[in-house]
Length: 313
Image 1 (cartoon, rainbow, N blue to C red):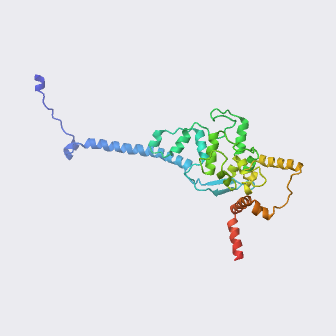
Image 2 (image 1 turned 90 degrees about the vertical axis):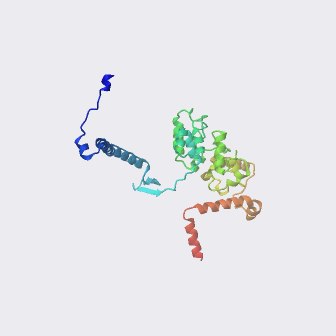
Image 3 (image 1 turned 90 degrees about the horizontal axis):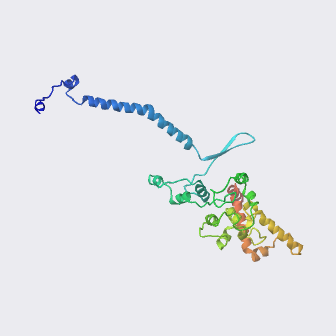
């Protein structure tokens, strides 16, 4: 205790810088300046090039002009290119089906962190119900084995025309479905009414004669009348080029041949105007409306019509 009582301060001479400036925190400030300079050097030497490479990688993968398609002319070897339509934020049914097949895990944490994605897309991504038509035929995509023939079928389907695929369909309503739910969703999306459960109903028949209803005629050929020679709801579009299965035409031909063998046949002659207007007005109206819609959809129609009107005027 006596030793502690006799302790005294030891005088320490301040550094020359402190004595001259009177600023006691000089070295602390110097250390802070040196640390700040070191951080800036590290950032410039290491971080800036690193983030620059990240930004360049993002630009290579996602930047530039993406709104075009191209093809190489087999004869000239030149690149032909044309602009594409503007992308839409609305997902079509086929895109949602592909999202479901990928089974991409979408966490709630990512959504709460600022990722904007609709509840509808999340439900599709998390669904276990396979909405695509699986080949070879299986209850779900996960249990389907690899099949070389199915692989070739999918490959060929991707480049085939509507007419080519219609040649492979059976003349039966709903024959292309994988399951009832898949067919209902596909049909409801086509007709714009999700309450539509099957090919029956007047609304389906009313749409069969429209140019953009190729898919409807392919999955509801009997309802649309693809197998009828007369009074068909398909009108001008009752052929394989517009979705009607070839088997419907084959069936219709077989019926006509069997009827001809029994002496019941119709001569190959023009329909009388009275029949078209009086007896079959609805069929005639559907056919002419489809024909007019098809003509209007052809390239150059507007220009040709304008030139005709100018010549008349």
